[in-house]
Structure formats: C-alpha cells, structure tokens
Image (cartoon, rainbow, N blue to C red; front, side, top):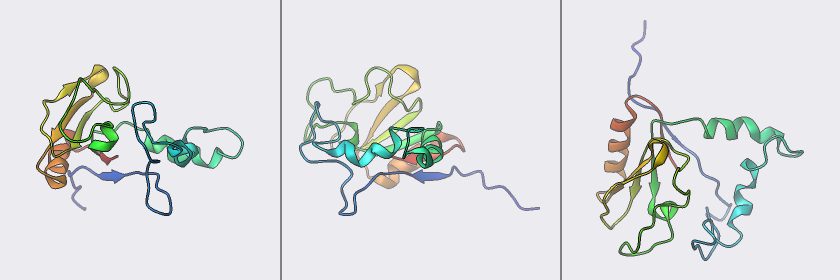
Amino acid sequence: MFAVNALPRVTCHMSISLDGFVAGPHQSPDNPIGVGGLRLHQWHLHPGEPGYEIDAPVRDELLTPKGAYVMGRNMFGPIRGEWEGDWRGWWGDEPPYHAPVYVLTHYAHEPIEMDGGTTFHFVTTGFDAALAEAKAAAGGGIVDIA
C-alpha cells in the first residue's frame, strides 16, 4: 500500500493572452480588469450559453472552494505604492474566496477580515513565504494561486 501525501495540492489558474497579459491597460476602481480586460475572461462568464458549453466543467472546477489562496497585490486592488484609504478589494463585503487569502505586496498592511470567512493577509516576504502560510492555513486542502 502507498502512503497518502498529506501535503496540500497547489493549483494555479489564470486567463492570459498570447502576449502575456492577464488584464487590460489602465486598471482602476471603475475598470478592475483594465480597459478591454474582460474579453480575456469571457470563457468562464457564460457557462451553458451557446458556444460556451465546453467551458462549464473547467469553470466549475475553478470555482470549487479551496483551503487558501495566494494572489498578487494587483489582483487585490488598483493601489500602487503605499496603501491609501480603506480599500478592501474588488469584491464587496463578501469576497468569493471564503478562505484565507495571502496577498503578495511590498507594503505592509494589517489583515482585513471580510464577511463569509475571507481574510486577506498581506505578505511582504515573497512568494515562498506566502505559499508556506497558505499551505499551513489550508490544512491539507487545496491552495490556489489566483
């Protein structure tokens, strides 16, 4: 019999253009994915509609709950440099994660607790540290690099 590895599985999903972009230019609070950036993500916004049926199983897998997440600061918000104001992410009071989220940043910030079980933790010590924290928080569950 083989021993089952208790380490969490790490997944990564990302829509990316052939020239390496995951968002359009001029990201702002009014354009979270940048000007024209939503076109890159259309495949998972219309499951069940004609022409998108094949995308539904992949979209459903991406949206299954994970144990923890790691994301870049740019995905958390449009703020560059030092933190300003009371930005709490793109998603409103109840983000879709419902798990700890580790945000990579060069600027320290206190954790932000949100409704539904999401807490954003801001990691200034690099990707390896954020991944280690996410794995520990996932407790054997899936860690997703978003």
